Image (cartoon, rainbow, N blue to C red; front, side, top):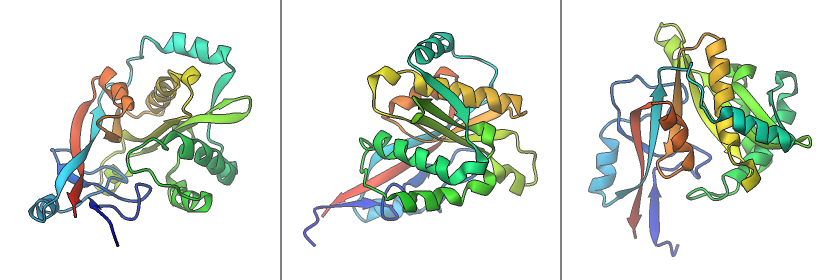
Length: 237
């Protein structure tokens, strides 16, 4: 077909499942985390693939520490007319439209980004709807238009293991590419952290962060410990 590079594992695009778990650590798998037999990365390497892009998940064990920059960020965002609100479960379809509008612009510069149409995107998020806790999903708006969002869910994998659910999985944070919105990601992350603490959760997992992504500084500021490593592989054809 004229291709010069193979990338994997990837189920079609980065909107679907991709990456191998390469270092499992001691923590049990969390809710919605991809998993694979430990030997799979070795199979790829034996077939001539090399790990090219790397990702991590980190666990924060103290949610009561507030980022000291938060007050200044909130003041600046308020001066620009940016406000936060929790997702409205009664308007889930409309809320997904707003999340989609932010996602396709926020993720456009991501490695291996490809387009996804609105209905495909929404069909994926509809599957998560039964697990959504409104206080853990926040939208940022400016002049009634969405400019960012944060999406987190309880770690229901704990429930399946017969233990109390005390952890929240922070899946996604996305901000429109606008320099005036600098700091909004921190503001959204702090909102999720404070709401999780208010709901009685004691830990938070920052899931599947690209090692070169600026958002990695958020868990670092709160002393989160890396619990899992993942890699995406390439091979020249």
